[in-house]
Length: 286
Image (cartoon, rainbow, N blue to C red; front, side, top):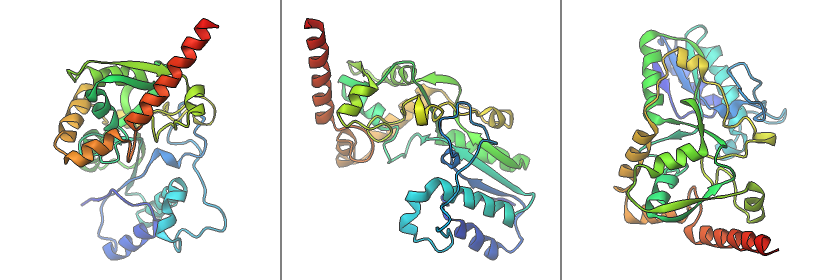
């Protein structure tokens, strides 16, 4: 009745699966990514925004899988095209942004509940009103089921939350589900750059909301919402993520606070904060 293709990057997988399925599919739902868009500076990107292309000398069907990360967005574009080719008229492509929630071992969101729950002074990126977007994995799964049950075809940006959210609202929302005392200190992006603090990798969920990434956290989910995408509360996402994180092995919990996968090592965070406070004090004395 329906194929849910969740992990695929390489278009050869779509082609090879289609050969095995041999026309016995009524609906093919492919999980893609908003990384397909070629110009992340565009604010309000929707499903018709321009997408990336592979370099002319890269064959997606013979590419070494170990190189897939380098061409992640363009490969997803080619995989989407393969889906449309193999399943004409019966395909759905879902393009989620950052997927978060319980079981997310990338720590790209988990870092914040874990770090804020650890207490103390927490380094926060840039300005409180910078935008941020993400989608709870459970909302994404439920949306995919709704698309299958209603046999809805086409392409959809699966992005949350429904209304614009600032990074301050996200971080204070996370803070509200913990009982640990602490404070957020907002440090300008220019200073973070000087300190080698990277967006997305160290300051997870966040990208600079200007220049080449001005639209990275301002994409449109209007079409998906009209098709049935719904969102649970930030408090639910944050609490469930933190509850799950606390069940992880101690070594994994400690690795999260060291920024081993995503996030900033607490020792390095303290150094950056100290340097920032010293700069502010020096400027005030000057």
